[in-house]
Image (cartoon, rainbow, N blue to C red; front, side):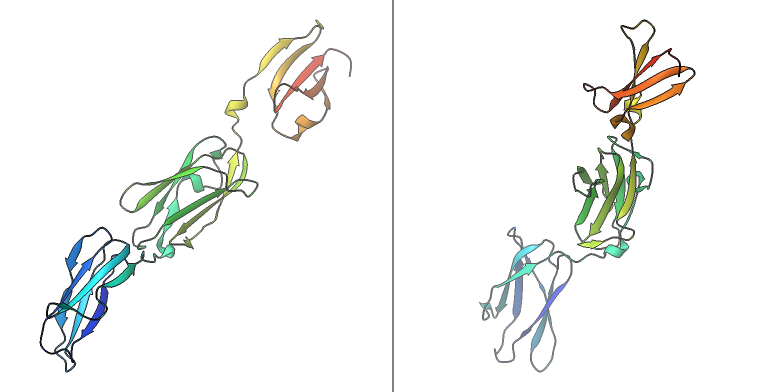
Length: 243
């Protein structure tokens, strides 16, 4: 595992007199001499230890009396160390149950200090359960990562966070995304051909936009209907007729 000591033993009991030397070459061609310690036992063994700093295939050369031993150099694949997801925490407005708004960026931070080495995984599912929400994870240093995402639909979202392939505590997070009411506050007053009628354009926020609604209000007769040319908006026409 990367950044973890790698150890092995060399047995020289049948090799005669000589010294053991070990060299380790990483995938980038950097070569270092490993630590070799005589065990001073009857089998004339040597303990070898080295610390791989990067992942990938390493070449380990073992020499005895200046000559390669059998099968040297050895190829050793160094993997990523398995981190501990139970030690990872995440918090921020993007994980709160309420307060996030559609089409508004939000974020949360992931803290991995003390969790070891591992990849961070984040997935945000939309109300249809699809992984369509775009996000960006940024390394902010000190083992802190910030995830920024922008939900485009109102409704329930699910945020899943993993570390080293395992789910972190409290994940998945349930996030309710509210509608962007600020962008729907626009209204337009217009005049009808009927001098006794006025109309105004209002934002539709629910299924009422899909059906005809009649209502009485302060002696006015109001009829609501969908404007074909304006998506998700309804038009209310009021006249002064009797209810």
